[in-house]
Image (cartoon, rainbow, N blue to C red; front, top):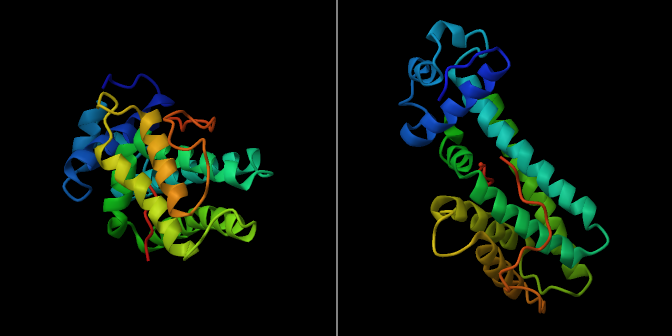
Length: 222
């Protein structure tokens, strides 16, 4: 990574270096000295931007959840008059986000216990909010007679887990395109819900905006 040349770039460079090193080596095994070296600054200079390593981890994990929630809320606003179209678009966004932001998703799912208690509660609250968005769509489909819902909470967990799992194996140069994966997972989810949707599983994007930028993933935490 090039040496930062100004204070505007440095915070982003620190965060990017932390994401890379937490992903590759784990939070506990990574030192701030190593992060500073990766960025190209002295370790003492890190404290001009952060209070400590735990702040870096909290920033990454809260940031990924904020981005995921914002992406799904935008989709829901766009499709608020069409519950089925909204669910399909949310699945699209969910899968693409976890594929595109895989390193942060991995950190989010593996380092929850490393967070300070206050920030851990904040992350869990955001995860619960995210699940509530998806569960609300499932319940709406059931109320409208479109879906056959056995247990909305468990079916929400299944959808969340699919996206989280994609982040662990998806490769942009792999045999399946992201469009194919989204189409197949959409078909699987709708079949599980007993939804008759002839547009599912064609391997085409649903029209939902792809997430920009990498999990928390948002696997459920109890």
